[in-house]
Image (cartoon, rainbow, N blue to C red; front, top):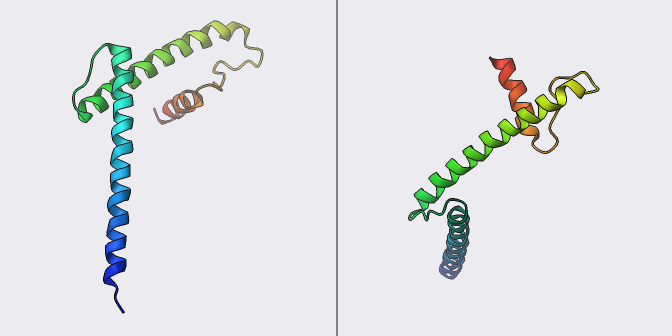
Length: 106
């Protein structure tokens, strides 16, 4: 029984699979790089730079969203019919859930 052929075929499939993964990953990084360039007018050079810049953008957008959400909740608070001072956000439920768990753990 010759198992060498199966082993070679298996290695070939693995190499092909890895090549496809790297190609898709490269395309995804390029897309992320382009989006970063559109938003910031900067062009990160390395994958590490792309990830660091993306992290910064996401954090900035999160802070901005939380600020706007706080303003929105404050504007609605006097007219909130349920009497709750912290209505749940259906758009970004993580913020409301996270704020509640943060308040509990503090």
